[in-house]
Structures are given as structure tokens and as C-alpha cells.
Image (tube, rainbow, N blue to C red; front, side):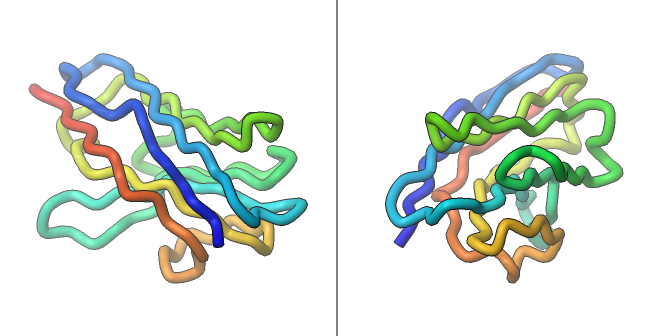
Length: 124
């Protein structure tokens, strides 16, 4: 089992910045990828960004490229999502996800474990 705990969500004005974090614990194995997905009310969960274990592979949704940056600290087993130039359409619950095969898929169904989610609200 792997436990994921997110933190850092909140309310921010459009154009502002926010950083969310996710700490992994438990039986993570020796190499795993991490990702952030989000879900807005009435919408399906969508991929935002993902990163492989050594950071050699990063992927971003087109809607966040150039504004969001994913990074990780393997000593702390923590992944971060730095979000800049936030827009009201970024408002959603942001979920941290874990993939034990160290691949970075965009499909939510291919992630093995999930955090509880953290709310990010961007006001106009």
C-alpha cells in the first residue's frame, strides 16, 4: 500500500501563484512516477502534469504548459506542482497520483494510488 497526502491548496486571485505538495509513504518501491490530475465540478478528472522517478520525463497538459512546473524530491518522497499565472478555469480539486511502473500516462485509470485531493480556487 502507498499513502499520498497532499497539501498547499487554497484560494488565490487570477494571475497569482500557488504550490501544492504531495508526500508519498508506504511500499513505494525503488522507482515510481508521480502526477497531478484535477477535477472540476461536473467534469471528468483530467491529467495536469507528471514526472518520472529521476525527472527525466515530464509531461504537461496543453492547458498548463508554460504556467505549471512539476518537480520532485526523492529524499523526501515528495512531488510538487508550482502553479503560476493561475486562471479561474484552473479551479478544481487537485489529486496526487502514483504509478508503480515509473511511466507517466495521461489516463487516470493507469494510476495505482491516489491522494485525498486538495482544493484550488482561483477567483477572477
